[in-house]
Image (cartoon, rainbow, N blue to C red):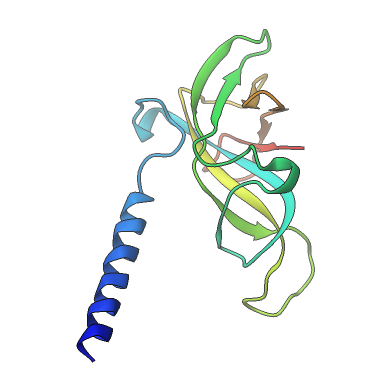
Length: 150
């Protein structure tokens, strides 16, 4: 009985440490949140996950993952920001009702804070060597823009 309680306490402690480690800044290079704009990066990989589950890009998008380097470039290809991607969260990819808690095709969504970005106009979001997409205006007032990786 004592071993079971110790194991449960250890599991709770490990979850707490893991969650605390996930609450740091995401995708900025030595910036405060006040001067960083948020860009939603949408990765439509269709991977089977439960909604809300932590994720990274899968399949052809597996290079789009937490800690991958990204840059933001202006219309002339000049780098205006650089950082690392945060981990993502699985969101609904299609308008189909699945049973609650069931794994379903999802897209991985990362909310990236980009230092100094105040507008999406004319900027391109580049991840690693292969994926580049324009930053589009977002309907959500809390976001600078959205990027659809394809």
